[in-house]
Image 1 (cartoon, one colour):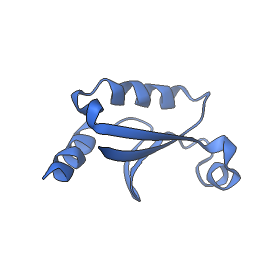
Image 2 (cartoon, rainbow, N blue to C red; image 1 turned 180 degrees about the vertical axis):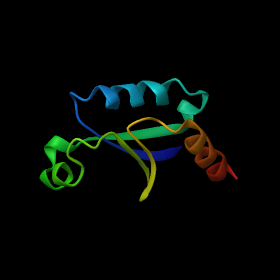
Image 3 (cartoon, rainbow, N blue to C red; image 1 turned 120 degrees about the horizontal axis):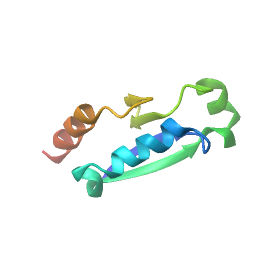
Image 4 (cartoon, one colour; image 1 turned 60 degrees about the vertical axis):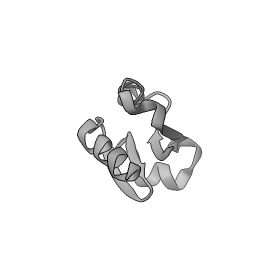
Length: 81
C-alpha cells in the first residue's frame, strides 16, 4: 500500500476535487491517503495558507492544486518493482 499525505482544508473545493480524482483512479485501491486539515495545525496553515491541496509521497511533492495523474501513476509503478 502506497502511503500519501494530502494537506487540505475542509472547505476547499480543489481539495475535494483532488480526493475525488484520486478515488477515481484504477490504482486507488493501492493508495492510502492521510488527509491532514491544515487548519488544525498552525505551522501548516502558515506554511500553506490557501495554497492547497498539496499531495505528498514522503517528502516528495506529487501534486499541488490539481492531481497530476501521470506523476502519481509513475510513483505507483516505481514502488511496485
